[in-house]
Image (cartoon, rainbow, N blue to C red; front, side, top):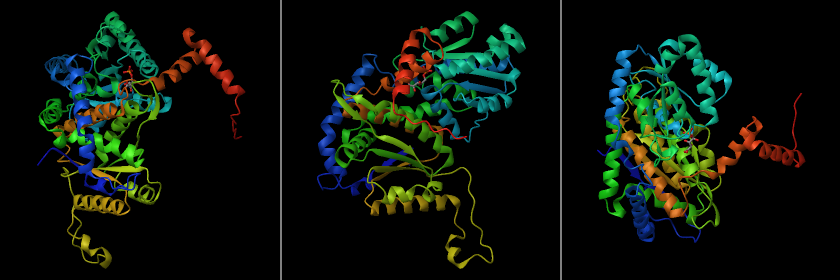
Length: 462
Ligand code: PA5
C-alpha cells in the first residue's frame, strides 16, 4: 500500500464556467506543458541555490542527533518550551500532534500567541529548572517570539544565573545575521541555522521543525525518509503520473475555470487537524498575492479553510453541499488507527441502529467520510481525497513534502512569487511604530490620523 494516496475522482463533477465538466483527462492535456516547465523552474532554482525545500532535510541530522544526545546526558531535562510563530512553529506542532502530542521524549509546549493568560498557563505548566527553551525565529526580529523569549530568559537568569540560563536555551535562526544570532553569540546559546534558501513556511524539514521534534522523541529519520520518497516520485514520474503536479493543476484549474476560490481541508482524524493549520499558512501566504511576476495586479489566491470530520458534518457540511459553489472539499483519511473500539453486540440495541453492532469506530469514520463525499459529489461539489496509510512518520513526511511541492507548483502556474509575504509587512511596521520604534513612528502616526478621519464606527458596549 502506498504511504500516501491522492484520489481526484470527485473533481469530475465540477461544472466549469463554459458549461463543460471538469475532467482530469482534459485538464491533463491542457496543463502538462505548463506543469513540465513549472517543475523545471523549481528544479533550476534548487540547482542555483535560490530554493532549498526539496533538499534541506538531507543535511544536519547527525549534528542534531549528537546535540540531542549530549544535551540529555549532561542535564536533567524533562520539558521543552518552543517559542516561534507561523512557519517557525506550525510544522513541528502539527507533526508532533500526529502522535497525540507525546512522542516519548521531552514534554513539549509550543507557545505561539502573545495572549498573556494562555502564556501564563503554559509557563505554570512547566518546571523551569528542567525546561529547555527553544527559540525559533529566522529573522530574529519577530515581535511575538522575541518578546516572550526575553520574558522567559529573564526568568531563567533570575532563578539560575547567566551560566545555567545559557545552557537551557537553544536558538534556531539565520546562520549568520540577525539580532537573535548576535544575542546567541554574546550569551553562549547553542544554535542551529535556518538555511537562507528555505522560506519560513517551507522550513519544517530544517532544524526549525526537526530539532524540536527530535527532542520530543519523534522519529525524524523516518519523517525525512517519507519526504525523500516524494522527491524521488517527483523526479522519476512522468508529468501525468506526478501526484504533486496533478494536484497543483487541479487546484488552479478549479480556480480559473470553475471559480472555486476556497479549499477546505477536512481530516477525519483529530490528530491530523493541526496539519490543516500548517497547510492553511503555507497555502495562504504563498499564493495570496496582489501582483504577478510581471508586477500586474492579479489579486489571486485560494482561501484555505479547515474542518474536522465527523464533527463538522454537523456544522459546516450543509453549507458545503448547498451554499455557494465556491468550495473544493479535500478530505483526509487515515486508513489505519492505532487504537479502535467495536460497538458491542448487546441486548436491547435499538432496531434502527442494529446494523452498527460489531462495527469498529474506524469503520464508522470511513463510512461517514465516504457518505459525505458521495453526497457532495451528487450536489456537484468538487472533492478530492488524501489517504494516509497510517500516521507513521513516513506518511506524515510524504504529506509535508507533497504540499510544499504542490504550493510551489501552484505558484508557478499562477506566475506569482510564492516565497514572499509583502502583505504582512505594513501591519508589522505600524505595530512597531505604535510601540515606539523610532523608524516607524511617523507611519504609525499617519495611520492613526487616517483611521480617526475615516467613517469607521466604533461600538462601545457599556
Ligand atoms: O513563512 C514565513 O516566512 C512566516 O510565516 C514566518 O515563518 C513567520 O512570520 C515567523 O518569522 P520568523 O521565523 O522570522 O520569526
